[in-house]
Every structure is written in C-alpha cells, then in structure tokens.
Length: 203
Image (cartoon, rainbow, N blue to C red):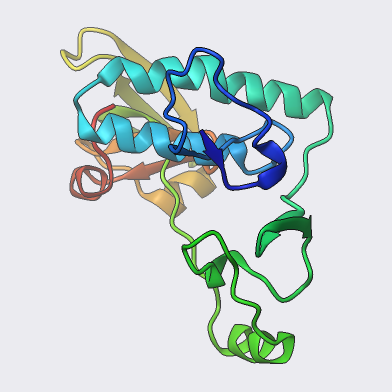
C-alpha cells in the first residue's frame, strides 16, 4: 500500500489484503482532527443507508477510543507536509488547499498566499451523528423555564420530561411536533420538524 507520507511507507500489510499500489491515508489519535474526520465518515456511511450498524461500530471502536486517548495524551494539529518527494516540516508556503493531486505540493510564494487568504476566508462543512427526540408537549413554568415531553422511541410508548431554561425557550422556541436535538459538539437545541428532516437522515 502507498502512503501519502513517505516516512509511513514502512507500515505495510503483511497479509497483502491491501494492494501494493493502493493509496491509503493513516489517521493517528495524536492528530487532534482525527476523531472529527472519522465522525464525518460515519455520518456519510449512515446516510448511505446500506450498512446501518457499521457507523455505530466504528464510533464505538475508533472514535471513542481516540477521544479517550487524547484526554490522557497530547494531541496536535498536523505539522508535516509533503513537498516533492521529501517529507519535512511545513515550509510556510505549501498548504493543503494548494495540493496539486499528483503527490506534490505547489510551491506558491508566501506573499501571494497571504494576499489570497486575506480576501478568501476558508469555510468548513461538518457532519456528525446526533440524538434527537420528537417533542410531544411543551409547557412554560411560572419561572419561565420550560418543560418538554419528548418521545424516547418512534412509537411514543416511552416518554421523558426534560426541563430547560428560560433562555433556551426564548432562543429555540420549541414547538410540539419538532425535535429536541442533543449534539456532542454543539450541545442541546430544538428544530422544527421541517428543519430537522432537511438537515438529518436516520443513522
């Protein structure tokens, strides 16, 4: 198998299940972005719907252990780049956005790159697996805190009472028929049924 990083080429498959010329990309737990990248992969696999248990399995066996490892050890942003056929610390001119696609990096002048960066901010798109509960009833208490009665299953046989703050009620304005959403990275929120179905597919 062929690694993008030349110093990783010593890592090979002794059983030859991976083709000799097959490109691979190795993610290590010390890479602070690794859990997020694997989470994106899980979300894409889940949205494809062909193997619904695979994403859950990878989350348990890869993402969670990576996060636990990062809590106990140091993680960092990647600090190596491929310039030509050599691997060396980032020279300041090569960037992933300028990767040429043929195992080499374009060596743009730093001044030119800085000018482009000033007028073209980088944007990011992220996917993740979230927990969501259908809202059956919404009530306001005297202290303006909210009480949401949410369904724990699709048949609405098991329900749960969730108490939320007045600030949460004012910001998200939960409505019956909407969804109470719990995200590992963004916390708790509420979406209307239309918003939720437009942004999510069942894992």
